[in-house]
Length: 190
Image (cartoon, rainbow, N blue to C red; front, side, top):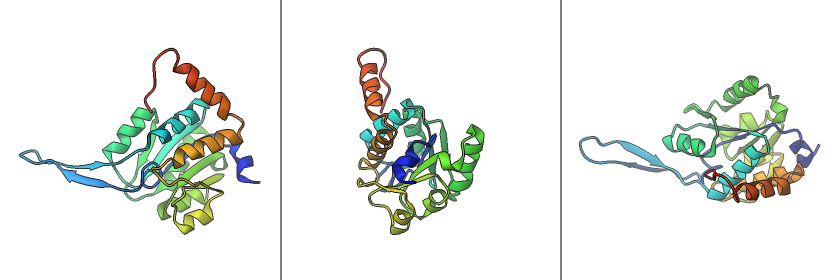
C-alpha cells in the first residue's frame, strides 16, 4: 500500500516538536533581579498552525509528543486547541502514543506521525503512516512512508496537512470551509 492509500485510514496525527513544529533551535535565557528565572523560547511557523487547524477541522485527532518539557509547547498547543500533549524528558514517545490510542480506541495503523530524529524512530516504526520532515536524519528518512520537502519549523507540517487532505480528497472542501468560517463568526488563532 502506498502512502497516499494509507492516508485514507488515518484517524490520529502525532507531531514531534523540536525539528518538526520548530526548526530545532532552542533559545535559552534568564530574567535578572531578585526573582531571576530561566526561560526557553521556540519559533513556530504560522502556516503550520493553520495546517494543523485544517486537520482538526477535517475530524482528525491531533497529538503532540515531545522529549523536551517547555512552557512554549503547552502554550502553542492551547492556541491550536490540541488537548493531548505529552512532554517526556526521557523521550518515551511510543508508550505515550499507545496510551492515547487506547484512550481514543485508535489502532496504531490508523496513526500518522511526523518526526525528524532518532527519538521518533520507535513511533515511526509502529504507526500506519510515518512521515519525515525535509531535514530529518537519514534513519528517520528510511523509516518514513512519506518524505516532505520542507524542513521542520519551515512549513513541513503545512505541507503534510495539504498532502494528507489532498490524498483523502478533502483539501479543497476544508479550505473552503475555513474561508467561509472567516467571513462570519469568531476567528480561531493559528
